[in-house]
Image (cartoon, rainbow, N blue to C red):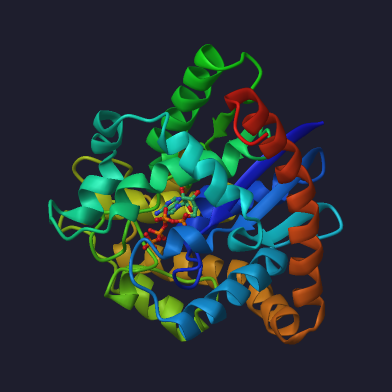
Length: 327
Ligand code: AQP
């Protein structure tokens, strides 16, 4: 059995970009692999968080994991800060990373915007992500396309340590990226990715959005003025993004969808997209309401942290031993 690890930041409600790019894979993988899914709260504090809101979001993300079909009997679900190995390994990896390679991370450049006051955590974030993955001897990391660069860095660090300290210190993981839905763009600006923390709530559709919010956000999504429904990311990024969402939710190929809407206006196409999105999200919302209120949720997180700790402690013992740390 291969081991799978991935995580989501509790920075707000999970949106369809997170779902179609990463979380759908979480569910798919759990039948044939040993899966570990984390709520990466330490990552979320790289930008300021309100403590009360953060605690709420942690539980929301945990409930959403289960609502989309992650089964705690098959997969381990836990909160990152409940396992101290993440922060501990992160320091060891920091000492084996280069400032040059971290400066090249596009997410850091986007989020820090060149400010001197950008939190240092934004800069070292990819190292914590590498620690998350390597702590569990992970083989496969299901993520969206935006994480490709971070996965490459994680592999580089693992190989570097294996070459300098001891060959088998780390398992070198592979990223897993989907063909459709791997990068969903913002509805109001199809040149930037859909994001939890963007100011405009109509830039995204969250998994818990009510039907009328879904309708509003899709109907006002940015398109273009030539009126033709076809896939052309460069010249028609808005329509192409909506086609990608349609394809990912319906499981149908883009060509097939384009043929169906040949000669139709954007309004007709958007109305159909509203319907299939509402249909896909309704059961998730219903499951979420039941799970979020149940006592089972806390038990799942406690049991998950225990299981994760058992694996993490074993890895840390090996890593410390290979580095000559402790006595
Ligand atoms: N727009 C996207 N399209 C496809 N996949 C995406 N992912 C994120 N945005 C898209 C994937 O979702 C997983 C969880 O992401 P995250 O919570 O770790 O943080 P993020 O990538 O920084 O996502 P957000 O939504 O943009 O959060 P904020 O606004 O807080 O920065 C990852 O696998 C990611 O690839």
